[in-house]
Amino acid sequence: MAEVSKEQVEFLLAEIEDRYLEKDIVSVNQVKAIDINDGKVFVRVQQGYPAGTYRDELATEIQEKLQAVDGIDSVEVNVETRVAAHAVQKTLKRIDGIKNIIAVASGKGGVGKSTTSVNLALALKADGASVGLLDADIYGPSQPRMMGISGQPESPDGKTLEPMENYGIKTMSIGFLIEEDTPMIWRGPMVTQALEQLLGDTNWGDLDYLVVDLPPGTGDTQLTLSQKIPVSGAVIVTTPQDIALLDARKGLKMFEKVEIPVLGVVENMSVHICSECGHSEEIFGVGGGARMADEHDVDFLGALPLDMSIRVQTDEGKPTVVSDPDSKVTDMYKDISRRMSAKLAEKSKDYSTKFPTIKIENG
Image (cartoon, rainbow, N blue to C red; front, side, top):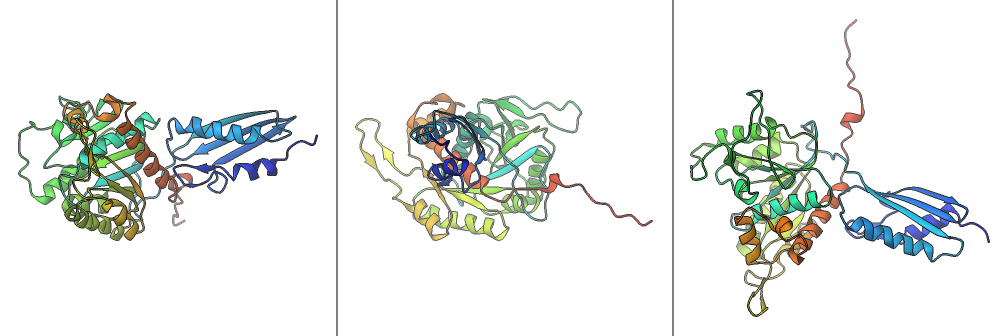
């Protein structure tokens, strides 16, 4: 029997779709090597985002597809992850060591943006990425409590800060530098300067992703972020409620104007399931986030429930993804984080570090 050709194997692989990219693995250039030797096939696949347990699922799907073919005796599949640095605003350069900064924003307060930010950061970490979390809400920092971190950051050289760490996430917040009940009575310029220092003076080390939890609205902090901080992509958090969607649209349009790609929309508090009887009720309406994403031609990353356990866990400093890793809600956060990072993986890469700087001097 004639040996199966490389072209035949590639044709079969083109029938397999990456769940989170929603495209076949050949067209998105995930198949990096196909080796065939005496009926033994080896396939190497490289995903541009942390896929966690989905890597094993994809490997199994490839194996089953190829092993069903006459002429193939055995199949070995290696699915690996390689997170690339992606392009930022044209006027800015990436921060050394940080591959991608993802901003999580909302048009208004009270939609669960900080809770979503911390759980998405933890989901990325659980799936294998190196992750940092910057609490950019200067007036209302909540990440120290949500991350279960107390104390102050150290400054060995008196100039830079060592990030605080818990659950494997490097974290920085103005909340580490002030008392929890101290109000920040600062004008805009002081806030923007503080944000720049929290980002620039922290020893982040090497990160695949830095998740930035933005304050609600489209004011000074968001403008500073868009003009001075190199952001690879943004995520908009909203509830299905009409008034929340109205403000979320403003945030989405702001990112579009400053050329920061919106990776997608997350609908929080989409449905409430009664802990006593199991009855589900759409308290804030239904489908608003998906409609908004459709109207603005951006991706709908997913919906999250209005669940008391999410609130209790974050209040206790043990967010859902780490306190209940096998729960349905954790699976939802992981699905959203994979979809988010997969959408970023499709964006143009930053090649600035690949080329040497050319200096022209007068001779």
